[in-house]
Length: 92
Image 1 (cartoon, rainbow, N blue to C red):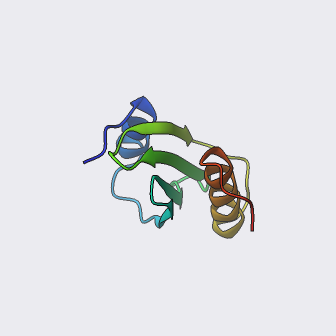
Image 2 (image 1 turned 120 degrees about the vertical axis):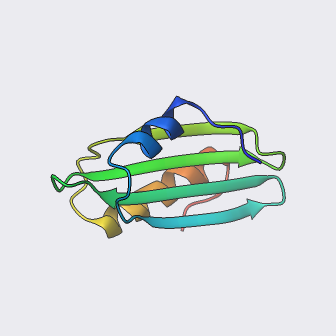
């Protein structure tokens, strides 16, 4: 079970019930990334990024309520790149 920060709470409390796109990946045996992207009811692209160790401890969590990225695809690509970098994994 993961421990979470206020960034995760902000993601879950913000516009509950919106459809989102989700990417979870174990980059190494000790590093998991979690990227979630959605558009809110105003059309803002929102991003949640998380990096965790093998015990579910948070290494990084952040929530961008208005990421300034224009598409879901670009936000997901940015989130994957950012979390992999924090996790110490080379970019695609």
